[in-house]
Length: 571
Image 1 (cartoon, rainbow, N blue to C red):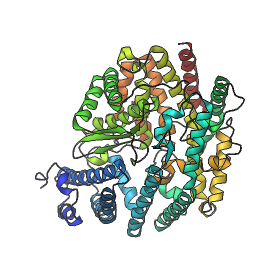
Image 2: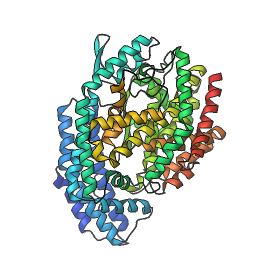
Image 3: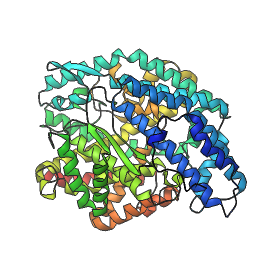
C-alpha cells in the first residue's frame, strides 16, 4: 500500500493540508490486523517523517534569518494551517492503534507515550498550541534583534563575546552594561509575552482536566520515571554538594582577577554564570577551521562517529557561523526524509563554540545511531538521556583537544580549556536548579506568577540561594530579569532539568572512559542505538551510568570533577 511513497520532502514543502490528508485517509481506512500491522505502522511513520522534515526545514529557514519575511510567513502558515490538522489526524490514528490492542515490536514505550498523548488530547487545545508556538517564535525574534553598537559597527550580543573576554575589566564592564541596557529595553515586551504564554498553558492544562500546568506538562513530556518531588531532591543535592564547590570556583576567579568580589562583567556575558579564561582562548579564526578540526576529533573518538560527521558535511547539514538577524543559540534537529541531522549554531571564535559543536554533534550521532529503528516514534528518546548523548560527547572528546591529536590547542591550553569546561559544568548545576525551581514555582502558583514583580522576586530569591558569591548590587534589575535571557523558559517549559540529570549521567560515562575509553564509547553508542525502546533507568544502565537524583551520586560526580581539575591545573 505504501511502497509508492516518494522519499523526498521538496514537493510537499508548500503543499496544502489536503495533500497530507490523502495519506491519513488511507491509514484511517486501511485494515489494522496482526498481518497488516508492520505495513500500517511503516506508512504512518513515513507520514510523520514527511511532516517532521517539512516543519523542521521551515523552522530552520526562519531562524537562519529572522528578518526574512517570506520565511516567517511560510513557517507561520505551516503552524496555523497544517500542524493543527496533523495533530487531529494523528490523534485518530493513535486511537485506532490503541483500540486494536496491537503493539508493534519494540514499541511498548512509544505506545505508552501515545496512550498518554491520546488522554491529553483536546480539540480546543489545538489553536492554543499554535498560538503558543507563535509566541515562542516572537521571543526568538526579540532576542534575535539584540544588537549594540561597538567598535564602529552594530554587533549581536553573542558576537561581542570575543571583545568581552578582554583582560581589561573596564572594557568588559562597558560591553556588559551596553548589553544589559539593550535587553532591558525589551523588559516590558518579554513580560507581556510570557504572561500570555502562562495564561495559554494554564488554559491547556485546564482543558485537559488538570488542576495546574506542571502536572499536565509532566505527562506531556512523558516523564514516566520520576516525579516533581525527585526534582526537588535533586535541587537539595545540588545545594548541598555543588553550591559550596561553585562558590570556591567564584572565589578562585576573584583571586585571579585581584578583586574582593566578582561583578557580573567578570562572568559570562549572556547568562551571568560561567567563568572564562584570561587571556581568552582562540581556538579558530574562521568557522571552516572549527568544522574541519572537530571532524578530526570525532574520528579520534570513534571512526564511525567521524564517518557520521563527514556525511553531514557532505550533505551541507551545518550552519555554524553567527550573523546579524540569525536566531540565537544552537540546536540539532533531524530531517527524517533526508535521513540526516542538521546542526545550527552561532560560532564566533571562542572555546564555547568548540563545546557547542561537540555537544550538538552528540545529538546528531544519536540520530544516526537510531535511524536503523523502523518506526519514527521509536527514535524519540527522553531528553534526560538525549542530553547524555550530547554532554557525554563533550567529555569523551576532551582528550583530543590538543593540536597533536588533531584539535586546537597546546597541551597547556587544552588543559585550560578542559578546566573551563569542568568548571562550567559544575557551575551549571546551580544555574539549572534556579531555572527548574523557578518554573516549578511559576506553574504551581500561576495566579501569583501572572505579576512580573512576583516573577522577578522569585528569580532573585532562587539566585541568592543557589548562586552566592557574585555582587549584583546596583544591578538588581539585571539580576532579577535573568529569566528573560533563558530561552527554554519561554519556548520549552520545564525542559531544563534534563540537562542537569544528563550531566550527571555524562560524568559517569566519562568516569568509565578514564578507565577504558574504547569500552565507554562502545557502551555509549549502544545506549544511543536503543532510542526510545527502553525506559530511562535502562538507557542510563546501558551507557554505564545510573539514573539518580540523590546527594551521594551527585557528590561522587563532583568529587571526580574536582580531582581532575587539580590534575589539569598542574599541567
